[in-house]
Image (cartoon, rainbow, N blue to C red; front, side, top):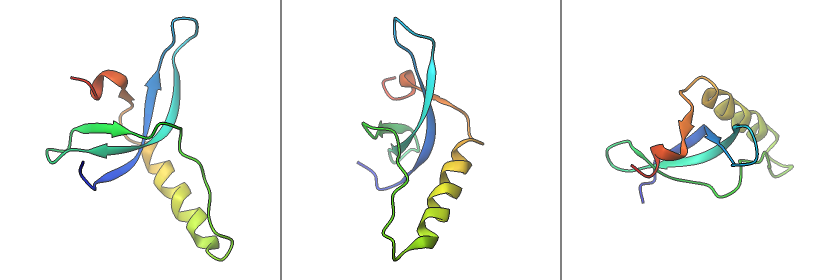
Length: 77
């Protein structure tokens, strides 16, 4: 698996509910195609000694909101 990743919004849908979106870590192949995403939605956690890290994480998540939403089919085609 490639080491290139970022946060992205992924749209999910269940048979019993309306579509919903979550921010996940997404990993890409050598061609830049999404190939995997984190099992759980991204969480904001940091060591108390690294307070600036929270702002960096939030900024990267904010960038995800400005990119096209990914669908599950983007990973399996």
